[in-house]
Length: 162
Image 1 (cartoon, helix red, strand yellow):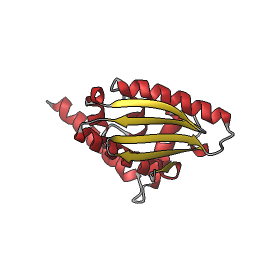
Image 2 (cartoon, one colour):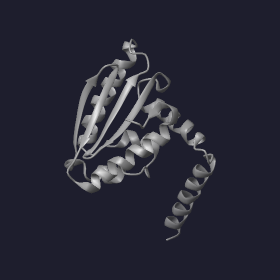
Image 3 (cartoon, one colour):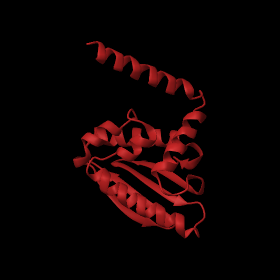
Image 4 (cartoon, helix red, strand yellow):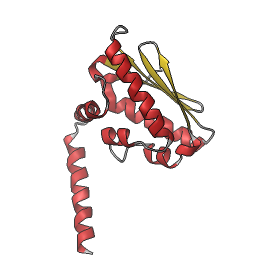
């Protein structure tokens, strides 16, 4: 089937070009992720910090405004994370995919296993937090892989130390 081969070759070429455009230090990828993130996340990445903390049963994702008095950023963070909680609970990881790509580590497993992951939202001072919990060891590993990829991709906008 020539059409299938042509599409496959185009896909391979596209991925090769995209990967080649990223420097070995990841900075170009981080720039691309920041650009995509600004289109998906309503808050200002330069005025906020993402924190990804793996836990034995999943993980905790916290987003806070760098200025605890920045009420606009805090409201935008809380609104976005509450919406993401609802989407993730149904297996919709479209926003992270739009930012990080379809091949993001862990996202396929999280999408398929969403019904076995408890995702809870809570307000925290200066932002919001999502708790991901599951008893499925493979999904815990997928959450950890997903967190590692986000920490790497978000670069200076992330704190993976918990």
